[in-house]
Image 1: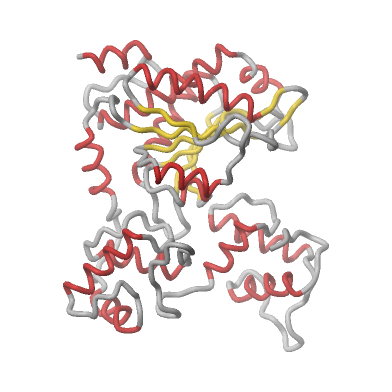
Image 2: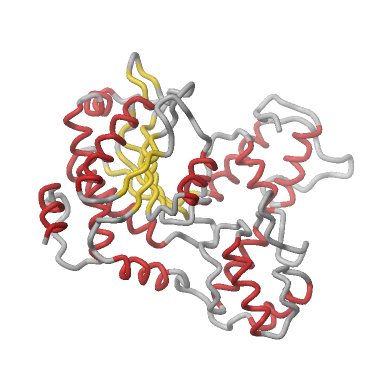
Length: 378
């Protein structure tokens, strides 16, 4: 689909307006049918929707926002759901299915609204246990059973104990852990550019510095792209899945129309429904605290988002926005190779903290690369 923004018109805009109205973000469509103008009211509604869904809030309907709008229209039971390898089914109905299976004790994986192999496996197990036709399809019979068996109490994080147990079994050592490092942008897409400083180049350099430190600890560090390529977010996530990554770390800088905007922020998968990647959230917190203390960058905290690089990865995934190139102070810091060394050390230490599970840890900002190496040889 073409990208839609304020001033556009036509049937595609009418569809967007109709969807926003159905979601309660625009007044109900009148008897004359939906308008075909992308006006200020539509832009405001799009921004509200994007904010609710953890998307980039730009008021523009591109492929990601359009997909999210479409997904938001589906409710469990409105259509049969099944695992399709070539074109995975996604939507709020899939998310509702995953949440219900998790509440009933079936491991449907991360509740991300995408019907994958793990969701199918959990669904088949549920059907087998409850005497339903075991076909891996969520149709009327299965939906009825799920509603009948829904627990009376809800809350907590059903995925939490499973994820913690995986980390516990992996052990505190970094050796053998497989990490995908994802330097943002690349190739023909330089990312944020100020003068001759390009986000893609800075993040490539940071990824290589981090790669070297990780390999020194015995970890297997993989880069999501070559220096002259720019895969989309989905391709980067699928690369991590195909490689069986234990963690996915996406590295970016930010920019803002105001030169006063500055600081570091970290992002993990999380939805408006409260579902989240528990370990992703934990790792984002570790990275955020380490970088804020070590670098002096303003702490812009951690945030849940549904970006494809976070939503589609099966392993815990974190995206870090390290400074604003539009801010002179942040730009000067990032342009300094020594500063990028500090950032690389902070991220590595944060990963180590994740696997320590709180045992033998040290105060934020005091753990060094030498300490990590020493612990790996004990």
